[in-house]
Image (cartoon, rainbow, N blue to C red):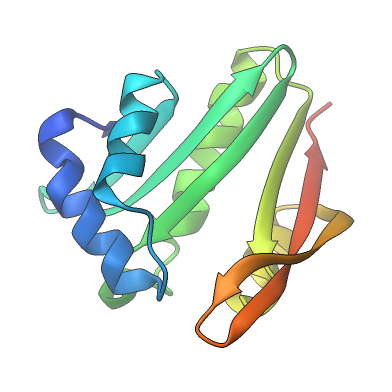
Amino acid sequence: MLIRAMQTQDLPVVHENEAAAYPLPWSLQQLADCLTAHYQCLVIEKDKKIIGHAIGYSVVNEYHLLNICIHPNEQRHGYAEQLMFYITEHAKQSGVDVMWLEVRESNERARALYQKLEFIEFDRRKKYYPTQSGHEDAIILVRYLH
């Protein structure tokens, strides 16, 4: 397993993984914009193949995770947890005290992972995420690192 910085040439595969994993994926342009904005953009590789990615950024002593994705064929093998551990350790070393993320209310597997990683529900954004038939709530989660 290798976790490394995302490169521009990775974007087509990252976008393919995103489209395979989510019914309403980020666009290729949104992913490219994150690289341009110098967010922390990571990929996770297995056998030299990109199987997932994460995007986030730090502001002062806070880290905001914007996107984490593992290709559906590689889910349930602990790769998202490894990626989250990497991000958390990097954040701690950078002086981050608190991590924030949002998750779809319906994404029970992700919510279970975040609970295992000691994230707690902080608030909700009503009807935040678009769905095929309307909108659903975003659950805002927080983890205090110190």
